[in-house]
Length: 178
Image 1 (cartoon, rainbow, N blue to C red):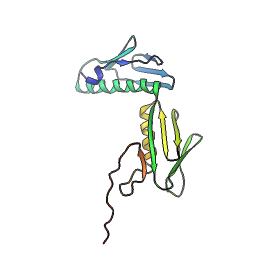
Image 2: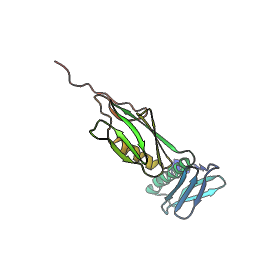
Image 3: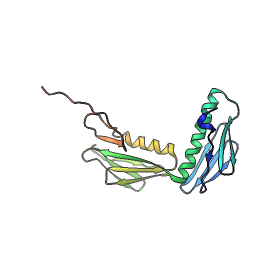
Image 4: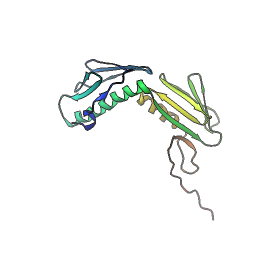
């Protein structure tokens, strides 16, 4: 049995959860999330906790057991607290701004980069070079942050690019002079 899957999930008081046969719907103050689960995973709700189980224990089912327990836990945390990823722009002239439902980045190209923000994702710009991205769906949040970062990944020579907060870049020595 999965060690992660065995752990019970505590349901926050501000969250409503509805478990049907193959569907889990979670509603909280930051939104509503829905996920379809496989038939081998069973979810039982008992006074304030969720217990995720598996019908038969094969290697694949054990892996799914831990995975879906974590996914359901992330749904509960997301709708009650939201997830946050902070990106930092490092480079001369690099800056960001939010205009309506799009994120505008100046990254040293001849044109500004416009990225449409999906529903459920909020972007806050701090000091022109720091982006705080918030969402209740951890999966969508990570994909959007990776999409923004893909426009200027950090490079090892000057350290310029879009970095996650706290990320360290391994710097390389450039050409050696004669």
